[in-house]
Amino acid sequence: MSDLSQLYQQVILDHAKQRHGHGLQPSADGESFQVNPTCGDEVRLQVHLDTTAAAPRISHVTWEGVGCSISQASTSVLSELIADVDVPRADEITETFRALMSGRGKPLEPEQEELLGDAGAFIGVARYPARIKCALLGWMALRDAVAQAVVAPPGTGTDTRSTP
Amino acid sequence: MNAPVSTPPAALSAAELAAVRADFPILGRTVREGRPLIYLDTAATSQKPQCVIDAEVEYNTTRNAAVHRGAHALAEEATEAFEQARSAVAAFVGAGDDEIVWTKNATEGLNLVAYAMSNAAAGRGGAAARALAVGPGDEIVVTEAEHHANLVPWQELCARTGATLRWIGVEDDGRLDLSDLAVIGPATKVVAFTHASNVSGAISPVDQIVAAAKQVGALTVLDACQSAAHLPLDLRALDVDFAVFSGHKMLGPTGIGALYGRRELLEAMPPVLTGGSMVEVVTMTETTYMPPPQRFEAGTQMVAQAAGLRTAVGYLSELGMDALAAHEAALTDHLLQAVGQIDGVRVLGPAEPADRIAVVAFAVEGVHPHDVGQVLDDAGIAVRVGHHCAQPLHRRLGVHASARASAGIYTTHEEIDAFAAELAKVRDFFRGAA
Image (cartoon, each protein chain N blue to C red):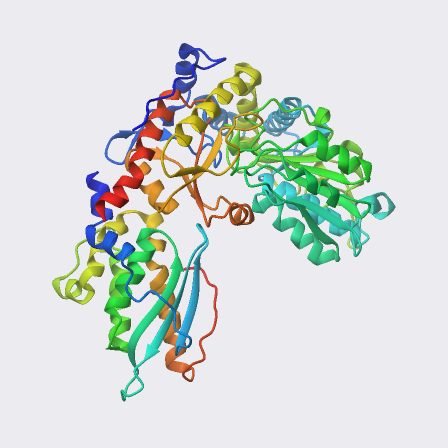
């Protein structure tokens, strides 16, 4: 099962079981609902801003979802990474993760690897095109929720359904 | 690990099955670092024998021309190939030549009927088409087991015309709840239902549904996608008004399917796609249309695919649909026993092989279907994962999505044993590794 072990690295299986950031809060600064149309998997993700910061800054994210181990673990890892970061850095992390997914398993540069931390373990997913959507589900929701949080007044999350 | 269940093929000998497999070149390939392919996704699309592949090549190599126009030698030969294919497919399903309309696939066939009905409701087709019109107060009945292709077009027809959609529900084991046949009543204009579910594998009681529909004068539409290549099919004997099937699910090419319609209904039906080659006289203001089936075949047609589908039904007929059905019945029994024996695996559909095709969807406790499929794929085993275009049925069965193994004429009992052995490892992989 060597290919499988590369795909399902221990850190991914751990995150799928112990999901960081799991559990929604009554309100959020941005909220997005995303569905993977091929399997019906879904995630609802909330972005909470740090209102004490001068520039837009994410305090933390919370989420709930139904999905495979890849989508659950990916959103869990996302919640760990996207905590106490300013919005440009969150965007940078998101873009780096997307680059990892479209890289067909090509290793990351050291600084990218550092930026992604545990999320680097998803490198094996990039070799399975059908699973990339699973890994990106939470990140799609993040991008949408952040866009709402930084343009909309706090506490007005909306519901969107779009193809990840 | 479970003991293999050995059920000898009832109607194909080992030698015959080996000969069949040799006809399908793709079955000889390996996947994922050299594992022999075990293809258990025939319900999504079947593999094609060499003769079907050759038929398309032969047509394109020697006879390619536009059909039903032009008078040169190639045009004649192409048209002959196209119409011979129609005759062969018509004979295969027990229909008349002029009762088979070529479509892109079954989805297009179902949409064709639904759009013809709303065109009739808009007054197109004149008095003859009035019987096909639906509107406020009329009801269309489907089932909760339908593929989206036999649900969404009817939802849309209702939205366009003001008709109401009703449905026959599903029991916990995936079979239709026949106490719901009472939804078929005086207001019912159409009853659209699947011959065999692409998720539960359950074969619908066609005779009972058709009888209920006839009693109130409703039209019946049968989705025969999952049955056409797996059961002997005689549409006239089933006494349905319309039926659809897709070539690629019956050893044929993609891009071709067919709509069967009773002759007098097709004659009454207004066209849907309009344009070239379906017309008689065209002036700048109005047009008269050809009789069926040409009335419903606008534009340049898929001739190579028709030639391929002709070869596919010829191949199936030569094997014999009874022998094929007997082989697949044994596979169904084997699949159900093998999957049913594994701890934590639940079959989504009837547990018994009676009135069932070799399509077995299942849920693995604590493991998402995508992850199940990934472990199987790593062993070279192709199954379908997801909602299989049947979200309402999955919801009814209490799951978001499922994995599905489906067999075909070329599937062996050894393949089912290998699949079951890998499936038995799935829960351990995710439990043990975490």
